[in-house]
Image (cartoon, rainbow, N blue to C red; front, side, top):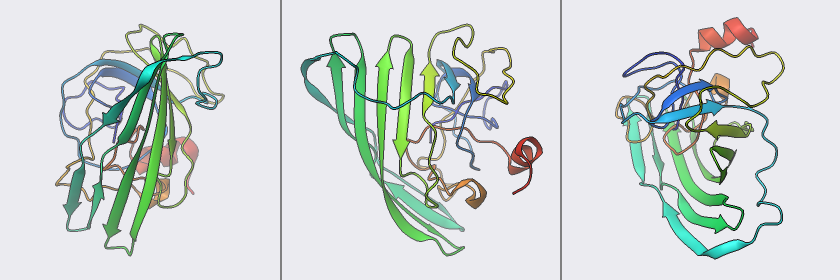
Amino acid sequence: MTKASSLKTSKKPELKSKPKSSTATSSTATRSTAKKSAARNLTIASLAAGPSAAPLFASPVGSPQPFSTKPSASGNNRGSSTTTGLKGTIQKFDDASVVTEATEDLTATRTDGLHSSLAASCRRVTQGKATVVHQLNYSYKQRTLSDSTLVTNVNNLSLAIPPGFQPTQVRDVKATQFGKNDREDEGTGSPDMGLIQTNSEVFGGSVKVSVMAQIFGSA
């Protein structure tokens, strides 16, 4: 799972991301143990970004190129999960945008009774410093994930802030990727947050359930 952190951290930030220096307000909440990766500069804002459609009035440049990520198996005494890794294409357009489309097959078994599989997909549209991420079918409870906008190499958030949220200043932190190949976690998040498969390439943020309850109230 790709996560983002807004606190100075080195191993187990409460908010996590793909290896980048980051600040985040993010959408997917799960529990897992972090695995350290190299840091990069990244700011992730989980904002209503609109549909990740193909760039308007843009024409493809060349042929689509293959895109893939590695498979993964995770597990502990509470269950296990697998992903085939993403498989898809990257297409460049003449307006300097880049569209990545890919799918990954997921499975998960938990001691609480879950034994299921998902065919997940993602679409990432990158233009300039911003990437809009659209993700489908990562939840075993059919939770719909909001689109997210990832902004690289910036000093502040220039994007609109969703109603009800109060942004903090952007700070350089060390974030981590976790979930894939994790031997300390079975690879899925809390049922309270929709049983999102973290043993995957899903983008999101991880926070404690107690913090979520404090901010949003008890279910």
